[in-house]
Image (cartoon, rainbow, N blue to C red):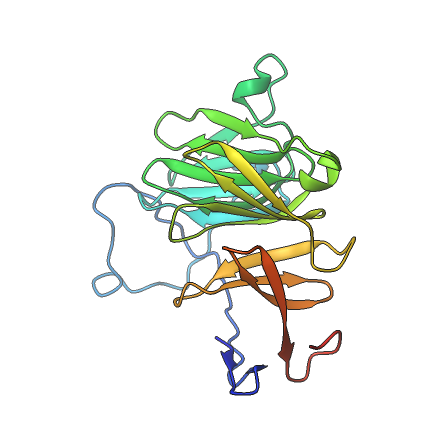
Length: 233
């Protein structure tokens, strides 16, 4: 993880490359295997539409706390139990209980029952992992199309949901069912992703730089990154 020097510059001492391999998936909710007893084998299993996947274009992957795998695709969300897929797609006959848009852009697990998914144009959606009920939470504001065209989703230590969107950064409080919207630090520059570190500092990335975000004041502070071209404080 980058660290702040006394001068306020982030120095990337370590470049960590994570190579994600789709090994044979053991998505079982009971009797999970431990790495000590069951070493990972170099065995691959290809999953496609022939196996029940809704679309071969996979946009997001998440394994929940029960071991189930979730795959976001260009045509819906897929839950995989190790043998079969359950697919969640827009349903015009149930618009308040299905996805508003089937193009999944990101996934994040919330509390013991919630999974959060964002879409391209349809906004934030809440999925009850136990019941399978999908509840859309579209942003209703000026530039609604840009607010609901979203890049990433993150849940912080206070269980607040943060959505990075073309129109800026959105804060969603599930307890109050309320959005707070923060325009981007540079006008018309999309927010790409947001993340909370172990010290509970909140980082926001845009196409014009990296920022620290003060959640109490709503203020963005540009952070200099050594070797990174673009705006600097």
